[in-house]
Image (tube, rainbow over the protein chains, first blue to last red):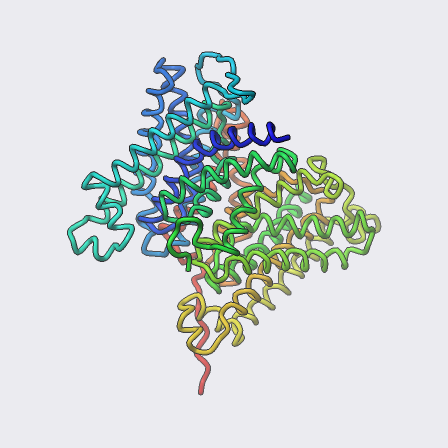
Length: 288
Length: 299
């Protein structure tokens, strides 16, 4: 029993690391643009398929294909923001959120139109699981976790030490003050769409490396991603990191008590619990 | 052919009820419900279980649908009503998915992916071939009744408070209105109406499965309401009938494009629906019948 719980913890941490990047994308776009962008799911799927094309058709190794996943999902993010969402911002955050759901449907079906509903696999070497002290660890999963942690470190370095990163944080903190200081809000909005959706794309591909990909890949994961962002505190990037690990572990540990089909309900329950008892999340600032 | 048209008109009536439900909460009160499909499902299952497993009359099934969906609405609103509005969006979206999960997995209650079949329709056996026509009349009568009721609600002092909450909750609170209570009541009524539509759906088709209640339904209803006119109850009903006309004509339209697989046809239709909602939001956000505010009461 204890060993099983420990194994599930390890699995949960590795699953959480993959959720982390889309959760950072979701929460950082929320912090800057101030609406929940539900099109994140389709961008995860687009990233996964872009990486798939780069990996299997162009023959890039999986790690290099992650860069393609970032770029393609990020550029689609900029394009959809410019074509649709930006124009609706004056109509209010909720109208933009509704449009983002419609956008999600359109983009997801573009993928379905091109690739159909079949499952695809990346071109990966088959590796035997390692056994460390009675715990089984998949080399691919471990690699995904390390890659996700590397990208996360890059995000923190970017936000902490570059001029653009500081400008983004300034707009998130106080848009009026930031524009007084000469930060162009539209440029920051474009950059955050690129970065946020790009991270969603990498997350989608990492998710696909773990299993296989199909047009609903992003949609299946989206409730966990929202839960990670809400549990960590909507708008807080360190919160999204903590929240993603918490949700990953909670989803795996739920297997001790619940059938695996209810895994994705765990995120929803976590959202309800946190909104009831600690709405600002673990590391968030305010929720009212 | 005539039966096809009758069925489509019946579905349009059911979408009309959903659009009225959405208009009450989104158009009038300014709260977003992205889980409309979930409330629709809760109502459909509540009524189906009441009339099959419990073997009670259909009237009681409809009451059960109203209650079950209304209570679910109160629960979700209670959790989020004090928070920023984005949270309600996330929670309702998740709710619809969890309803589907529960319906799929609690096989003892909902029979899982097999669905519930043999849901009784009112006087189905007695009416025989006339059932479709009679049920259309039933749905349209209920749609008319719902339209009259929500329109009265809109023009009443209650509706005025809801509009005030939509435009500025703070001012409404300062004016001495209990904003939380009004929001709860509005969401409960709206959710109950969506559940009622679900019950009517089940009693018409006599068969429900979790897969029917896909999130796309919520998009359909947003499209119907936005095209018809957010805030306008007649617009909501008009939008629902237009929506069904568009949905059905795309079924024929995609058949004209040669050389596409089944999945591609389905993808094209869904793209069209999502794309239409975006276009309407961008080009004509106030819809065909824009909201008309009632004249202010004379002192």
